[in-house]
Length: 157
Ligand SMILES: [Zn+2]
Ligand SMILES: [Zn+2]
Ligand SMILES: [Zn+2]
Image (cartoon, rainbow, N blue to C red; front, side):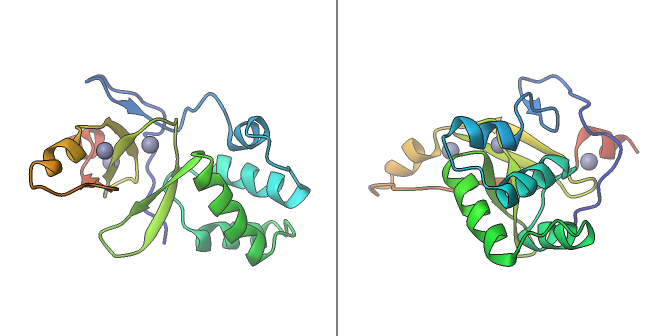
């Protein structure tokens, strides 16, 4: 899958949330900083991830790797995605279709709003949903929240 990607990348808009795609630190750099062993296939895969214009799936990366003859195997893709997720470089988002995709993340606990029109992903601050849920008497161990909608640019067009 590829969410359709428009030309709005990097155009920030106010409101206290930050639109991605203009990360100052690349996946390659973040892997490096995390002290992960940067094998050549991993480095190439991280570079492919840096080139993704929006949310991407493992299948997207495999396709990109194949079309560039990057010499990155299936196992490397899945292992590196798991590593990047564990390091907080990318975050998994669950799409309304039931598929899951990944986006690059700036770190820190937050949530995402995903535009169904252009694929833009905007970080949203945590609203302390765990605290809210604790009122139910549950001991909350994890939560995952994704919001889907139409971004300001798509709403205008
Ligand atoms: Zn994020
Ligand atoms: Zn949009
Ligand atoms: Zn949260």
